[in-house]
Length: 178
Length: 178
DNA sequence: AGGTGATTATATCGCCGCGATACATCGATG
DNA sequence: CATCGATGTATCGCGGCGATATAATCACCT
Image (cartoon, rainbow over all chains, first blue to last red):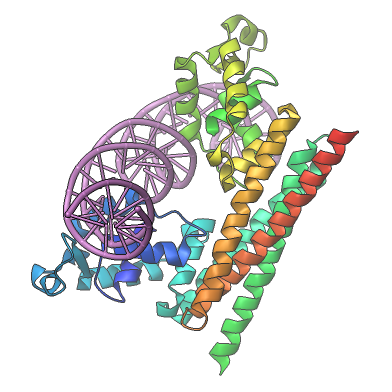
């Protein structure tokens, strides 16, 4: 997930850690933390896996005056990995956190996979919606007032998201036709 | 968080792990996973900390035919701990995951603390809302279409939640007056 | 000239929670 | 009587977070 996001960003241009984190925070800060405590370990993991490499120091030397920053760039294997993650977009792609990240990289996602992700997400939200409906129906009176409020609000929220997803999907389809 | 939830549940009655998890799943399954992979380690942690104790086997012996289940009950220190967690309800209480859990135990939460939590949560959601507004305003055209959709939907969703919280707070106040 | 605080920058640590998995028993259904 | 789903306890590895350390640079105020 973090891995996916980093590979996606590095697709645009080589960057150093701080900048990657900043871009992610800009892009998805409202939905995810993307803390340094994950960033640097993940970078090292990607590096060890050969998906990214540290750029030679020559280029950073150009913009000197700045200091000690490590610029990473994508390797061919890294690009491949990103494509693989998209191609195998599975169930864990639909959940709250992951979905937002994937949306943020939709512009470099093939149309068919965009569709798969949107529909998977919809199914997932619909399931949550059904769960909430059942709970609200079943319990009736004996449930705590506050908990019921929470479920009511959750239900409304999921209903809205399903509608939103339907719009996105419809838009995708209309684009596919043209 | 998990700790808070378990202590809260055991406040009602002594229970064994499976039942605790089931109740939590019932109560908050739509918002949180509460997997076994956290449950049992957390129970052991609470036990080591002296917040819960394993009930003597005599009582479980009564309902025998069943098997090998460990019933935990709250110690005085456990009750104290729960009260402390409520009293010190701080910033990390306002975030998405935690708030839902706290709501679920509002019936055993003092009115003033309920208020603190609701208002803290509101401030937190308002901040996210402002962040989303800025992003939507600032970027204007250059932002990815999908990302903008995501932020639009997020903004709408936070606006609704603020309204909902206002209602809850108003209700609390009217109850306090009577 | 000097101090102070925010920003840029990298990195580690411990903790929490999840998903997967293993194992064993019980009840109901066929 | 076999098989499947629910009951029940437990562990493992991993990903991500918050807190924290360190340090240089920059902008601003005095």
